[in-house]
Image (cartoon, rainbow, N blue to C red; front, top):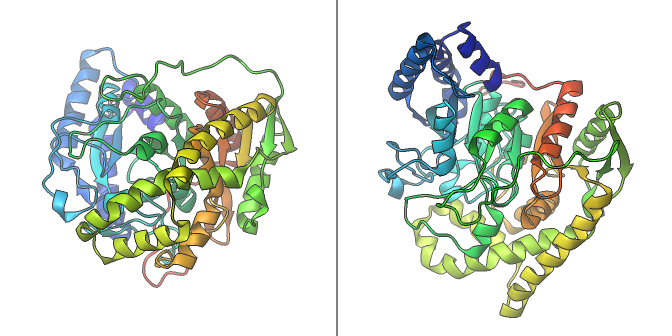
Length: 466
């Protein structure tokens, strides 16, 4: 069941919150040993919260929208009473003073946290393998990455251990694991959902501030909508947040959609390309008009994302490298080599280029309010194939549409559209800033016609298939 279906079942008395929480805790016990997605389970606390939720139903109290529904939280988001480890041993006892704003708001909406999910060290990688908890396994194919950095959330959702999750991206860390594991996610507009932490260092470089956002993950688009409504809105704790409405003006019909099968003409795996075409076909009868059209300067936008993000990483790396284990050092070294050096003039120019690209994409989106494109143009890579400069260069190229959307601060929903060769196919639906409603409506139309990927039993060592 989806999170919204569970909320209705609890509200109507069809099932109790305790029964729902117990079912998900049992599922974690059953399948987490095979995927290592939820290393921190909050069983006793979740069951106590579920008991309180049940008493509220019995009293006939007014119930919030996600009353009694369990959810999980990525290990770099503060969850009071549980260490915010960022996946590293040095922070194994780093207890936050309060919840992250998004967690606080999910609780206020009635949801119950049941666990912290795995992530790479300090969320630095496109593969989930943490110093503290080890590697998360792709439940579809153990030999391939589950994505990152929100890979634990994606694998937990794909295997039915949670109906809802909270994650975050800087360079694609919501949509990429959603593609790898066959779930759906919303990467919101910069400033839509607040972010803050009480774990030092609480501040981040301007690059992270511009690129990083928090967003929900789920198996159903309706759950993304519910979680967005619960978590969006300004907060004094995050100066970037704005009071933008959740629905914008109704667009003219039919809504024009730009279909991008091979961003910047650099090559796309046929499985990914066919997924984009399937998504385009699924919306033909839903009030959308599709054209093969490409927004301007995708390659430049992707490069600009790296030009903004990489220089602070390179500047801090000599002082911080000693903190990390060999795998993380190997990945970062390969990433720095793949992206090249930057002088001060190039860094300044990257921010000017970003603004110019925002204008040109804004003009394009006047004609095409929606864009359907690949997430990564490649399939989930084989575990370990992200540790040399040529391999990382290939991953960066495959992520070009993700990087472009991130640097422009646009909202996008990743939605599964089927399977090919035993792996999920996924697309991202991109809209203008603060038009998450358009993304969600279109993704829901795709989901209605192509269905969802129901929770799967994870592949185990020696299995040919999940």
